[in-house]
Amino acid sequence: MVVKAMGWAHSFRMSEGVRAGREWTRRRLDSLPWAAAEPDTVDTIVLAVSELITNAHIHAHSDAHLVLTWDGDCLHVSVHDEDPTLPRQREPEPGEVSGRGVAIVRKLADEWGMRCQRHGKTVTACFRPADPDPDPGADVDAEGGIDRQGGSSS
Image (cartoon, rainbow, N blue to C red; front, side):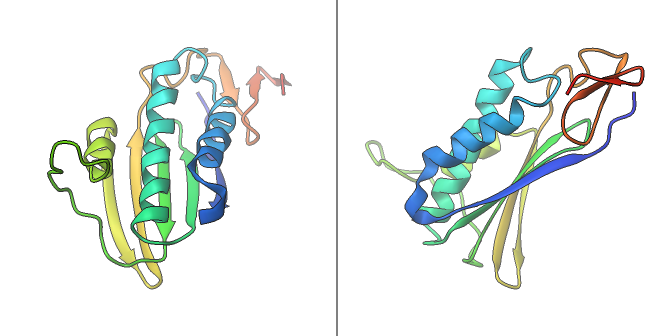
């Protein structure tokens, strides 16, 4: 199997809301060869994106800069905001409507981490599909199409 890394990036202004980020992410994931066979994985990734963009908008008071990268093994979801304060997991009181985002992402992701940068922070989560290559005779091209023994289906 030959898989080239591919990725997408988009910034979501606070005025756009989180829904735009979920919809944009779902459209990008649809181009991956395993997405149709793993709707639960896609839903998990979209939920994590929703939580991370929400955190950027609500807690960092910042636009959210989302990068999705597929490397053949893991779908990396990275969200950058302009607040250098790292999120912390806390135990919200019963009935509180916020405070669970970090815990949700930690629970959903196969791996996750965060790092401070010069102008803010980035939170990254990795999601591994159960079967990243549902057709072992196919190669994924740079646009997300399938290349089957030299012919492109994109």
